Length: 497
Ligand code: BGC
Image (tube, rainbow, N blue to C red; front, side, top):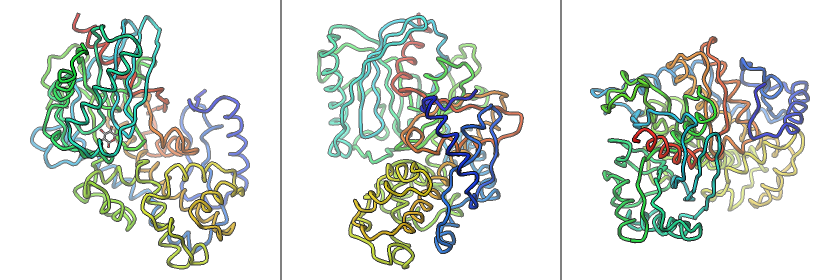
C-alpha cells in the first residue's frame, strides 16, 4: 500500500472520506483523473476541486489550465533541452544545463562515522551533525537565519557568516577539536568540476551575493574557515539539495533514482548513464551511472515556455531580482506561487469580478499574498470558508462575500494545479527517458510538504503522462538536503579508504 509519507495513517482515513464526498459533489473537474499503478486509489484517486465558482472567473482562469496538447509540447521541449544540456556541443544553447554532479556512488548501508553537514539554499542555513552506523542514523541540527543584508551582501560576508554559525554549533556540541568530514549542500546552479569543486553559475531564490559567480564555492568556504581559524574540517563533497534528497531516499530504497525539490525553488536530479553525460570525465567506479542536476528551473529562459505564460508570470519575472531567469521555477515554486495568485486576484478585482470591485492596499502590495495562504485556503473542506475569510480579512478585504471565497479558492487551485502539472510533466519526461520499470522519486520542499493536494495531483498527473509500463512512487525525504550531504561525505570517505 502506498503511503503518503507526511500524512499519518489516521489522517489518510480522513482524506479518503473527503475524496468520496467531493466525488459526489464535484461537477467541475477540469483535469482527467487517472490512477497510479500502486494501490493508492484511496489517497490519490480524485482531485479536490471547489464547485460553485463564478462563470466569469472560470473564463478568466482558463489561461492557467494546461491542456493535454500544451503539456505534450512542454514535455517534448524539455526533453530536447535536457538532451542538449548533456552534450558538449549543445549545452550552451540549452536552458536546462543538466550538470554532472560527480555523485556516482550510492549509500549501501555500511557507512559509519560522524559527519558534519551544511545546508544553504533558502532563507535559512543549517548545520547538522550526523552519526551513521549499520542501519542506524542519528542527527542533531541547528537552524540559523540568513538575513536579507547577507543574502544581498558580499560573498565574503556570506561565507564568514556560514563559518561563524558552524563554529557556534561545533562549540555547543563540543566538537571544536574534532577533525570531521564535511558535506556541503549548496542549492544553486553549480558547474561541478569534481566532487569537491563547484563553480557558481548564477544565484537564484532571492540571493545575490557579489564576488561568488564564476568562483569555486568550496574554496570560498575553505577560505572563510581559514580566516576564522579554530575549525578543522575536510570538505568531502558539495552537492545540490536535489542530490541530497536522492541520496537520503536511496539510503532506504535502492530504486530511488530521482530527487525533486518543490519549495522556495524547484529542481530535479536523476541518475543518468555515464555514456550520455559528456561532461563526466572521472574514473568509472563501476556503477556506469552519474547523477545529473538538471537545473530545470531555468527551463523557458529562452522563451520556449512563452506560449503558456500569462501576464502574471511576466509580471512576477519582471519584478524579480533576476528577470529573464528561472522562468519555469517562477511558474511553480513557493517563492512565487502566492504572488501569482495575488496578481490574478488584483486584476479580477479591477475588472469588478471580485470583492464588488473594491480591493485593498494590501491586496495591491507585492509579496503580500503568502504562498502558505494557498495551502490554507485549499486545505479547508469544500463549502467551509473560515480560513479563507481570515486570510482576506488580514488583507483588508473584510467586505469579501462567501462567493468571493469560492472564487478565490478556485484561483488558488488553478495556480497550484498548473504548478503541479508542470512539475509532473517534467518528472514524466525524465521517467520516460530513463525507462526503468520501477522508480522511487525522493521529494522534499515546502510546497510538496504543506500544500494539501499537491501530492495527490502529482500522482494523478504523472500517471497520465508516463508510459504505462513504468511504475513510480513519490517518497517524502526527511531532511534530505542535510542527510544527503552527510551521506555524500560518508560514501566519499568509504570509497576513498
Ligand atoms: C536552484 C537549484 C535548487 C532549487 C531547489 C533553484 O533555485 O537553482 O539548484 O535545487 O532551487 O532548492
